[in-house]
Image (cartoon, rainbow, N blue to C red; front, side):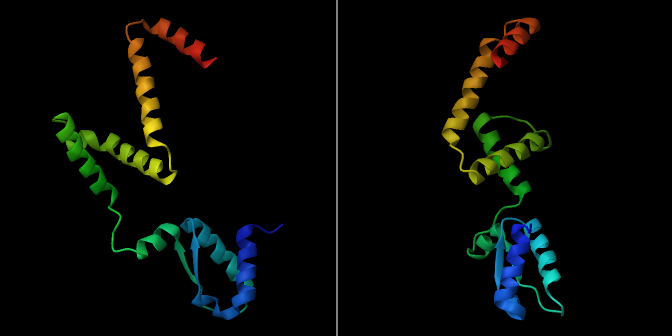
Length: 150
């Protein structure tokens, strides 16, 4: 049984033939485009130009004058806000590791359209529960944790 990308390559080559190079094909990621190109290469018997293959992110980026900031810039902006809000004197080097993780988490929240208010409320509730049990010894906390897992 042929996979989706192989069937897509077959269909598009059947419809457009050697004029497939005039098309733009948008994929969710680069990997899908590479596999599509491999399947398309199996269809042709003579050299042709490939269609333009772009990712959905690249496609949207072309539609605007706005640019996505690089990860280092985003972490630095987050660091500046963090220092302003908390008054922390933590160095950027110390902040970078978890700042990068936080930027990635924010990106995932946006990508997957997560209910951010609900998510942060859950995190806050879990932290509050942790604080309630901070005065117990390690063995007691392990027993409670085991109880709640089961």
